[in-house]
Image (cartoon, rainbow, N blue to C red; front, side, top):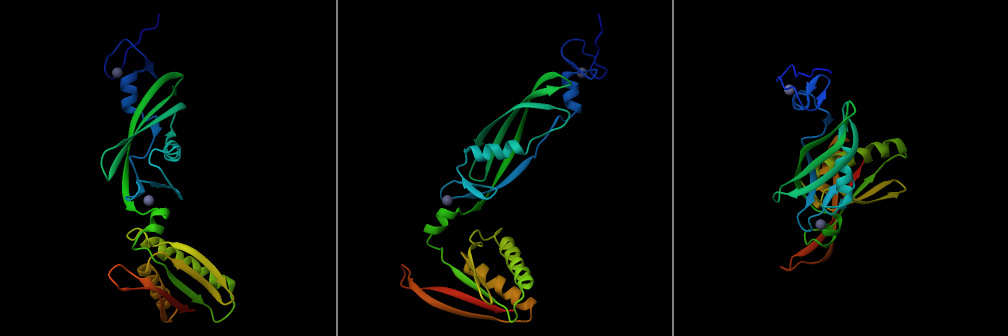
Length: 233
Ligand SMILES: [Zn+2]
Ligand SMILES: [Zn+2]
């Protein structure tokens, strides 16, 4: 009969893994790696969250699958993962994770918690019906035909707009189109359109030419304008 003795706590009974009692072993070994917190964009109008590129219901399978994909075993054979979502408040939720699997052939259940931080945003469908939604157009025009240059400038716009989206959820390219001497970008945020056009213009020693059309009147009787910012590169 083998004599078991935990060198750390002195325990003599129960399940042993690699010479230690289960409790001491789990204390000293991290068998699964998982993020402590994950940030999600969250639409405060309809409660949807953005998982990768899609807006989905908070309790959808997409979110659960995404969370599961972020759990990585380390010397552990995962057999099953269960995720339970718990809404704490407007800004925060928890994902309670239960992972079943084997460590050194011994069945274990490991429990963890991932904090889900909700960053305010606006989903595509709510954006379309939002009263502050309107479009602005950036026109990038090139003196010479140079597809590589056009692509470079497009990526520069994309990067700027993406950066601004951290503070302005409407900063996004809603549509883009090609013209024979450049491209058009339709943005949902006028501010992001203006700022990104100004930055690109400055970079290429150019200027922004602004024009607008009146597209209607708002509730207070003020003109609703749709701006176009043209940058020549
Ligand atoms: Zn022990
Ligand atoms: Zn929404």
